[in-house]
Length: 356
Image (cartoon, rainbow, N blue to C red; front, side, top):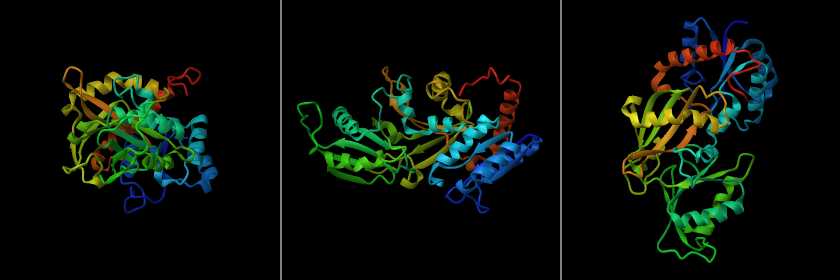
């Protein structure tokens, strides 16, 4: 078996080009060919999972997962297949459990002991726990709630109490207190009773991966969210996403009218230093898996204790990071794939560099 890479995609979705696959897949294939490797795109379907597994385990040196979470109705079978491929010697870029560890919203709660995430960041899996803790947290200031599913800001809410609110005897904001809720999807505002809004959020706790993350609102988000695109350990470019300059706007999605500026990592030296200083700790806290091939970290500006700028981590994405605006990165991606596989090939499998 030669050095062959399969790129897994899913049919359909808004991330596809005119030929049905992602626009950033073919550049990776061509860049690997320049290194005398071969590559191909395989469209995954649960119905053909056994056949796809057999083909990949017999032919692939490595896989690259390029499936957006929303493009499969249920990822369970896909992830099971990826785990089987890894356990039978196919290098996973990334390992499915790394995708989950980095990409789930509760990754933030695993990093509260680092300088990247505020320590009053919580993840809820149970409705009563959410109802109890969130009503306490609101008394301390404006909060942001994030559901574990959805995209483009859907189910991400900035929540603040309206007017002077007298706490209950046990230190909660009362259910009949009025709250102002702004959804990141389109920055629309709703004013409703707190108890009603909490009941509305119960939908985010349902299902296999139901979860709500609750963290303090960062007022300086109006200055923009800073997304760092990483090629494993190397920052390759930065997207400065500035929310629309309208009342209540805090969302950094294009859909909501945010303005994107693409910049070089060296234009953000303090942030790059902070990422480098915390990278090993982040890897350890998120499970110790080999770091994903392509991933992003979104930061917001905050005021440090000494008055200088600092940065707060708001989200990580490692499932299917696109680079269609920077297709020239394909050569770097191919170099990293080849370098990683060759490095793994010289390591005795009984004593690997990464334990999963």
